Image (tube, rainbow, N blue to C red; front, top):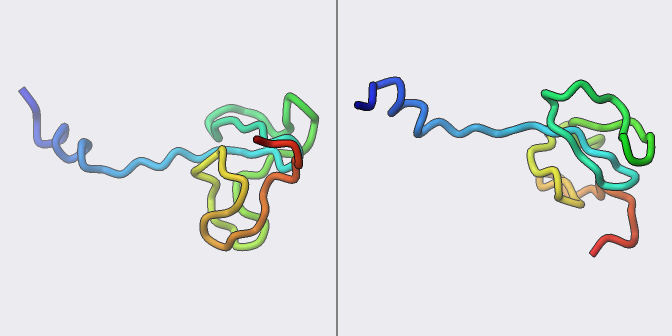
Length: 77
């Protein structure tokens, strides 16, 4: 039987936050204790460098809020 708490949680919008490598596009959850990319060694970012919007779409190449290019890799599909 569902409780009122279960119903409340069902309608809650959860946005996971990520750290993104601007060099190679690799990403990890902010819950992981990583500061640097395990693929290329670049420092990971958890927000847009221009508008400071948190990264919630880890596969996006551009910030959805301001449009700045986040990932510098040229050979992405």
